[in-house]
Length: 253
Image (cartoon, rainbow, N blue to C red):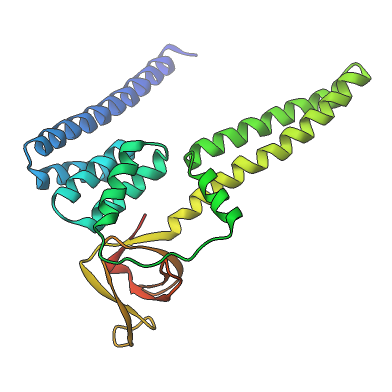
């Protein structure tokens, strides 16, 4: 490599490091300001700072948890549930997140009876919620590559025993890898849920403001998204009822 080319490469690397360092400093500074504001009960400033971090593309369970706490203190239950739910997806086993989410859910006005699931569905949902989608995906990919390594042994093994065990282990690990990858995909599909973020809204019978109202919903209720037409989402409630809500009054988890 010529000296000038080496110099350009080093300058480019230095610039990348500076940008990354500056980004980290900005995130840390915003976190610090937000945390101090929260401790001083200035929840509006805390929310503004936490949201500025999100706008920079940074995501973490701690960030959404802190936002949930700030919105809860402001009595914005819909936004509190939204960010606790997002935090729970990033850290499914965090006890503090689960605890706070249960507290705010107990204050939601809508007490809709949840339709019972087939026991295998409950088992599946319980299993996938043990880990985040990224963790399940990492486990699945690890098993997949171990399976590939074993199958390579099957192909190039020097003895019949090595080839036999390589094939058996490879096929077994390949099948095992399907489970965590499927769990990761199932967690990703959870993004097809949303939270009502306005104090009160009518569930409509069709995607039209002038259509008949089915029932009143309140902030904090979690709904499943089924379809979308224009600015309207077709949703299913926990009790199985279906209707339409404007995209302006719900926010996807």
